[in-house]
Length: 396
Image (cartoon, rainbow, N blue to C red):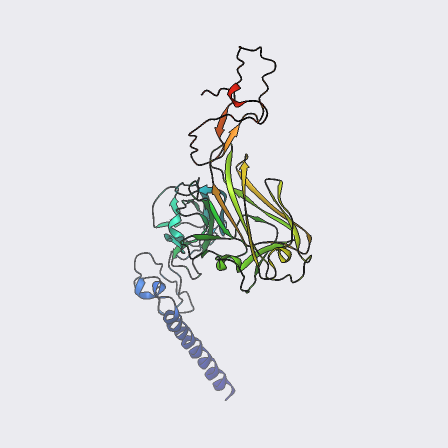
């Protein structure tokens, strides 16, 4: 009985093992993604005798060995890994221009070939980015250890912060397709450069003007106030703020001009402070203090709104906006930047010295347009506070 029981037990174990292998094969085939299933030629199954079902092109035949049917992946079963998961275009571009390309290396660190079927741009701003292969065409296959470069460019059509995702569409992989976040910012055409919703996302202000999501900030934190601000026709902008003891914005307005002039309008709201003196701060544009000891509660009251505009000349291509608090936290709700014309002269005073009566002295004064929009000069006149204006003559 002992020998019979042992033989029976051995036979039962062997039968159970074969049944489990067959069940594993059928269930694995049923639950695999369709593109990897037997209908697509991704797998082939062999029987216990080693007589396998012929594999379709692109797949590999499983090896039965001594353990019966085994499922194996097709030849395109590797994994694509990009060298980075985001691309930031750090230089602000003018709309309707194209950035220099940023290279992204795709590699296959796995032991199987990996096929890239497509490069797809996704998201609401997908049309403002482009992607291309450095060489070759789609689809392409990377062998184990092989890599390939793709290039991405930012081609903004609208001002402000723009976002998209690049999807690397793989064929035959069991892992999700890798996605690379793309982010760039642009300024508009002259006179329509920037609208920034400080602390908030992209919004339409109700006057057919799009305000960009917050960008360009150095320091500070974003806040959503959830309060109704009094005295503003821009409730979408005053619904959020950026605040901090000391923070600012660095806005690259590289227009190609050695010097450029802008009208900067700053928007403020006071959703939190209740008492005079709770929040006091200064604002500087290009290093010059334009607002000193601003106390919004004192000026407009709690839940109040305030805006102020300043003409500023930018000589290095970067507009600097700095806020610093002496009490509480400095705050800002929005920044509006518009290019303007600006008359500039090479000197502010002309000294002729002593000129004998009846003779004429001559001095040259050079004037220029330091702005970004055309400047029309329709008249040149001389006025005098002490000496008669008739004693001077202006000629072009």
